[in-house]
Image (cartoon, rainbow, N blue to C red; front, side, top):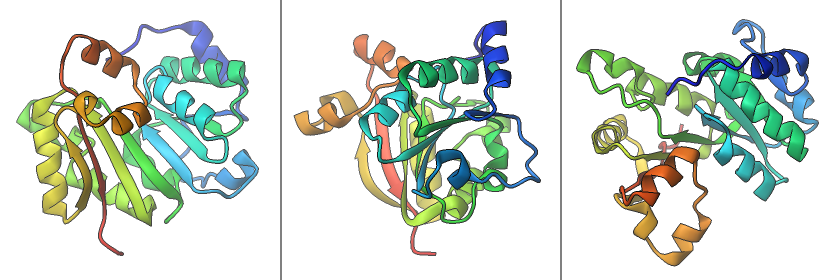
Length: 218
């Protein structure tokens, strides 16, 4: 869902190039090790919204690096404010299109990719825009480490069914699949980090679909 434009958020992104990349040129490689100050593998959330999920992960895991990839500059600014307010040095914001993912991240540089409540693009003619379409899966495979995973959550049963089929056809393996995440075991529920949308939908009793999937050895 597109957020209402917030000039302060846009300005914040422009004022903090050390923490947020504002539509960088895909032809110019990003030195993530320099930006983070270390060369630990990166975990990316594609489409971070207002950032509740990715900022929570960054707080929980200060030993890991995270990138919030968000196409809307206003949303990127909202995430950036949370990062700055909470001193999350292990979080960078990338305002960019996921179609350019491979240009921004090197091969085997990423240990996990999160796809949370992505736009389902329900019309058939928009299939190629779905973030679990085969062309996007190829991009994820290129940047993930050999044992890297995609963690996917949605409230949309149609997108979930499509994603399972798309990943299966691509030859991926599934480590975890749930059609009602919030009614899994206590251990799984406690480990789950909610997004803003997830909390809203789950509080209304709507099932949350989830899967963890990886690629066969390269």
